[in-house]
Image 1 (cartoon, rainbow, N blue to C red):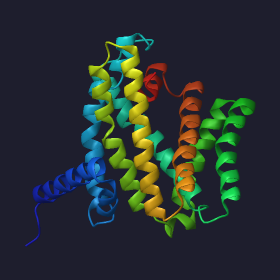
Image 2: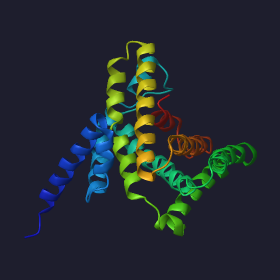
Image 3: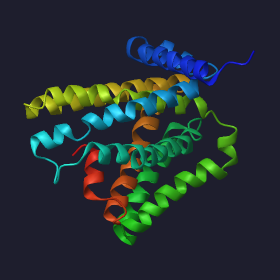
Length: 252
């Protein structure tokens, strides 16, 4: 007898909880769980469930410290994180797949490719304007995912599960930062510590998924983020994204 939609969603929710719990307590176990059937649906469910919670705290730390130019409503933050946030994170994932296909190359060549990509986008933003840089960033990312025959033969499911699961943990930092909002130093400390923790979880996960060295895994974690932030600020400078939306996404 086929399972009902309710039982299927219940199984996905239970699997999502197992993955998130393992990611916090035993990352190696979490990376193994991400290879199991149904893991992608479970991680996507965890990401969607985290969006309303993240929007509850997103921007609260900055507003409490007077960093944001204007206050934002809960529905606005939810819309920004669900819409623009998903676009920006998709750019990060696309850049990851682009760079990861070069992972087997000699480290010096890989470093050159990794540095050249965000650097060329930054130069394009400076020389040709942020609009063209934003279009190039998003176009390159989308084109690579949709058209490249190499990505069709490349491991995509497990790193996507990793990205979604890591993003689902973001409300933990935002909630802790909101509780510490009475102190500028405490907020900064929370953000820095959480940033290093996420960096560690992601780099360790990519090292396991792609069976690569720790330095290469760190490059595959950091450099797509640079490309993502080039895309983010280019979209803002091009007038496609409001300042309030940019502040919600960037945390400043």
